[in-house]
Length: 325
Image (cartoon, rainbow, N blue to C red; front, side):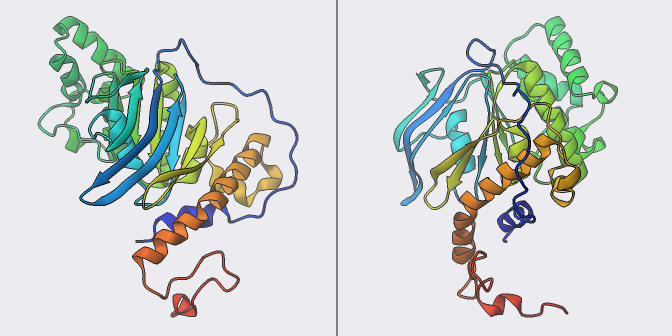
């Protein structure tokens, strides 16, 4: 129930390291003129069944930018993704894609969900080809594009496999390939690796970084994991909860490609590279800014026995009953 507190503890596991040498020149993502599109939420509020889900949210996404949304459960991060995808309409405010109001879903915006959601009755190659078939792409061009995407996600050998014959990581790579099929200008990721083990998660983080950069597509990525956001994002927007709102943002000015073993650098900072040390600093800053929101969710979802994780005694002593058993 309190999964959101795990990444706070991980990010704060070590004290802030000593000052590090100056960073290398930062390699920037493609900006205006790239394949990716811009997007914006302007003063967006969303009410559902009498409850306010989002309140006055304004976010700008630059063309080619990798933007990560981080925050505890219940903050409306997935709702923001649904607004950008055109699956939900705001109660107030505007959602724009390349300066044009979003009125519904479109092939220029693709979504990758936590569940790969591949059609179980289709082979991998037919799953990837499906959006192209719907779009009316000719068979020859369709086959060429599927071949290209299978090579991109390193799944050419499994083209004739059905989803149940693939591992979880392979299914997610297949879902990413399908999302890229129609050459969208923006990909929206809704915690796509949450159900995967740590090693597979890190592998796919590297794959997403590589694939998105190769396609020069704008990316908006929802995650609860601070280290994931620091690895993938050019910018991390912090979302508060109930109602959801923007409470801050952090720029990740680190070179790419980035190393994913942020957890390891926390226990061996003395031998870490400059960008590793800076990544931990950024993760700590994000954790500090979002901690109050995590405690708020914990108090609301628990009972009076829950106390603030930042208090001098760690909160109500009943939280520690059974410790050491």
